[in-house]
Amino acid sequence: MSGFGDELKRTADTMRQVRDRCVWTQQMTHEELIPYLIEESAELVDAVERGDRAEMREELGDLLWQVLFHAELASRADDPFDIDDVARGLNDKMIRRHPHVFGDETAETPERVLELWNAAKAAEKRERTSVLDGVAAGMPSLALAQKLLGKGEQVGVGRELLGEIAAAEAIEQADGMQALPASEEELGDTLLGLVALARARGWDAERALRGRVRELADEIRAAE
Image 1 (cartoon, rainbow, N blue to C red):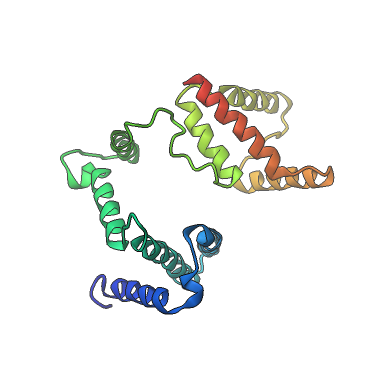
Image 2: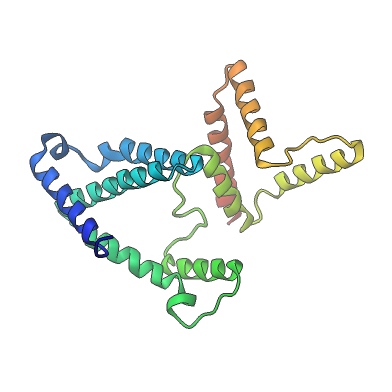
């Protein structure tokens, strides 16, 4: 293994040369790179879920290339920053958010670590006025729904959904029949079945969930 950072520096220099000499690369913008960033992220997720370590290494490299690409574009903008600025900001943030590692705090449980992380994050984002500030609306709808439900818990929104789940569980116990998924695998089957139902009826499952998630976001903002 080479000295730490040597290959990173070499790859950043490769990106710089590609930007200087490749006509395709020269015409690209941050916005035009977004589909590639999404695709590379999805391919990495796929490799992780399949447990393919060789593929993981390659896809991590492809994702790193996207980071270097964006940083190189940014270094040539009117308000420039480069990959060193990105790394410096990341390092400083991670040190702040791990006071039990780099400071005087102690954390013996994962829950305590999360408390310290959230406290540090809140201190950094004091200008934010909503629990939804910083949530990326462009997330896939399922991931966004899960994220917003967590945010909603902070302001008491979404409890009626938990009530519906509790009611269904009570029916299960009374009837002795399973009405709710009992595992992630069964949940996957249920979700796929709902998508199949939507397709059979000519509905757009993604649009349906995204519309409901928008309503949930409005409910959260109204409750704040």
